[in-house]
Amino acid sequence: MSRSPLVIAIDGAAGSGKSTLARGLAGALGMPYVNTGLMYRALAASARRANASVDDEGALLDLARGLRFHLRAGEPPELEVEGYDTAELTSPEVESTVSAVARHPVVRRWMCDRQRALGRSGAVVEGRDIATVVFPNADVKLFLRADPEERAARRADERMRSADDAGDAIQARDARDDRTTPLEPAPGAIVIDTGKLGIAETLREALRIVEERTAPR
Ligand code: DC
Image (cartoon, rainbow, N blue to C red; front, side, top):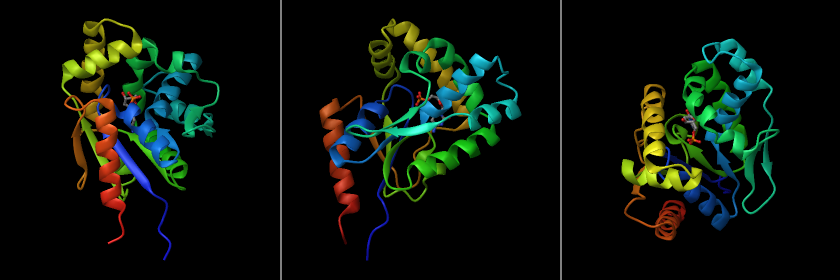
């Protein structure tokens, strides 16, 4: 009997090391990498460009429908949003409005459908609600945790901002995101504390879990 395509769900807070692990895992396993945060970030950027209100659910859904998502060839193949580059998607302006854009149920339902389509042939999918809502039957569910200081330091390195600024921005976004998608490990998720492990160790641990969870019984 052939097995359905493998889906690995990775959830966790901003700065918990999700993207580093998800990309590493996808590369090691030869699977596509889908970063769902980019999809909400692109919608926030699109709303800014169009001068649309973050409260206007209908306008946001229309803008979402205009976004083009692709898996860019590479090792691993990665999700990209046509016309939006990393500088814009990680800008403070986008980070300050993305939670407001992502809080609308109609927008989330539309995004979830796109995410399921992108993961249909198997993928490592990263976000906040992947194992709870998008792929509740994922073969492997990982939930990443890290101390707030650890997350702020990591974000400061990535964005070349001070740890204090990065920490404040993360905390403000956490509080807003928690109202929409409370960060809780899904049933059956394995929690990894990335503050205690380095990048290579986190990847090794995740690969061990994937092997264990997908071994024929
Ligand atoms: O993972 P990230 O920091 O790139 O995500 C950007 C924002 O998108 C985050 O503040 C919350 C939102 N988001 C979401 O609501 N659901 C997801 N599956 C992924 C991200």
